[in-house]
Amino acid sequence: MHGAPDHPDTVRNKVITERATEGLPLITVTPNGGARGWYSNWVNPGALGRQNWETFHLDQLIPLVDANLKTVATKEGRAISGHSMGGFGAFHYAEHRPDLFSYVGSFSGDLDFNTEMRAAVVGSELLEQYGTPAVAADAVFGSPVWPFDGVWNEQSAAQHVRSLRGLGVAMYAGDGGDLTVDPVLAVAENRVRQTALVAAANLTAEGIPYRFADYHDGSSWAEGCTGKHSQQACLQADMNDFVKLIMKRLRHP
Image 1: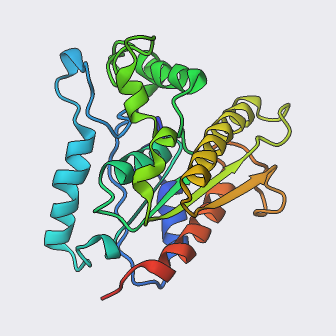
Image 2: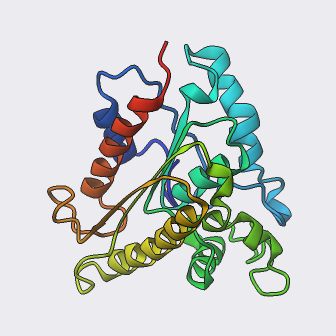
């Protein structure tokens, strides 16, 4: 699952997945999640019309893939992962439908809808670089302001990890490294790492095993990774590690 305002068919997304899965008996599906779709059925889409991304992916896309490709069409044959917005999407989908997936992975995902992450979501709704026309601040999850923020609380992935019991769980994040170098990407990674820490604490409290690759400035994680958000070297290492994990669990034809 790609991030915002990314697209599934960028060269980077293709390269990362193809390198990590080369020679392995895997079918990889990278669906369109919209530049700001947030892998959710929107509450107030307005003039855009229905934006039912969750319904599209879980109820339409997965059956389409299983009907047309040689898959193992059960949760034992299926894993889900994503980057940034897509990391939220992966956890969100796995929490809503644990019957569909055996493993879930977040690569620098926006896992906890704290004040900072709410601002990021609202920014994706209001800023033109995430798509035109812009939409209202309450389009995806409704009002972000208490006491009208019930949908935000219901959808905050880090707060609902209990339903991941029995699934393999993996999270990956850096701390931004040197915050004076590429400060926007550095701060972005630093803050999403905090959401992973919240998810990790809640997983621990629930007694659910997980892997958290907390690689800080990236120097020990991969060559060229400096712990920033959306760095290809970091994401390649994330995906390489995740693929090794799922290959130990997935059932193969």
